[in-house]
Amino acid sequence: MAGQGFDTKSALVIVDVQRGFCPGGSLPVPRGDEVVPVLNAYIELAQKAGATIVASRDWHPPDHISFRSRGGPWPQHCVRGTPDAEFHPGLRLPPETIVISKAQDPDAEAYSAFEGTQLEAKLKERAVERLFVGGLATDYCVKNTVLDALRLGFEVYLLTDAIRAVDVQPGDGERAIQQMLAAGAKPIKLQDLSG
Image (cartoon, rainbow, N blue to C red):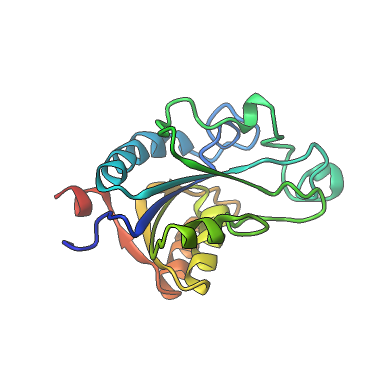
């Protein structure tokens, strides 16, 4: 796997590792907190290589369209400014992390970290060509972020050891992984990068 590790033209994109999506949160992803130590190891590798580090977060208004109160599929979660919307306390994000807040428009769904945000512009400013994507949840925000990144022409590596699925329907996570790989994402694990 040499030549596929982090460098200055790559970015680690950590999707929505927030309290709300971890056990004890308002919309917990089963075993969602298991991604935290793995992502911390990726953060360390990315930092050493001078890669860009991005962390996206759901930053919902209290009346977001995805909430059941408005006919959406989800309980209220990750409302901006609440503890539920904070990044997982164990996630060691460096001070230079670019934080992308998404799904802020009450009337628009936004599962992808690219949707309605400045993420693409910020990556292009830094001449980033390759993304390493992990986080929560495999079958929603990770999938949509990866598919958008591929559509926008980035090379994408899916961190298969640093994602967890909601699995509303059993197998949703596995199907999402197959969809991402079919679209051109490459699967990768920590041991592939750390030798």
